[in-house]
Image 1 (cartoon, rainbow, N blue to C red):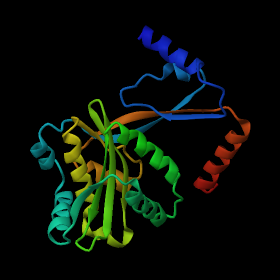
Image 2: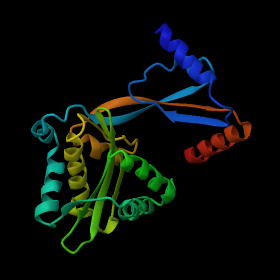
Image 3: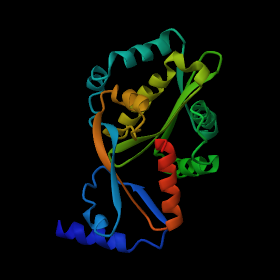
Image 4: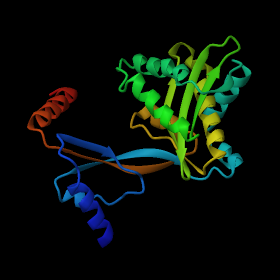
Length: 235
């Protein structure tokens, strides 16, 4: 604990000058006290993790019945087939449609996604999974990367007009099968949105907390954040 305190304190003190710091810490990092002592704040968030991919039959048995039904429906009724691609450009339109359906602007640029993909592809540590029908229409897609013993599900996208096909569930299950070829853990990179949380949990994943540590030093940004909170709360 003393060594960890010294290291975390040195990391906090070594940060370059900033107006705002916000970082999601790895789930293994559970001590943020040295940052607290330096004026940082912490919010507990949650992800969902499949902790053992060595027995895929057990993973399947732990998956809820509605997800299993969606996977079978996608295959048998809608004829969805899984295709792996090397082209990030095929997945991006599905990601964009997912955010547009929620009236949310894409929170990152396409250039950024290509940059991340190029870095992961250069190490052979990623997979782009697409679900398409016999007519070639893309219904859904999933993007995963992996390192050490864990795969991370970074992106999910689907066509809102075709969402009833169950292709989203099939893509995620296919991503889990792909991850099991390389690692033993699957991190859904959990969302705090209730419908998304319910979907991830339905695969039998375990809830795991992680810390979002932050600090705002700019008075202007502090005011803007407070105003946004008031607007959201309706006050």
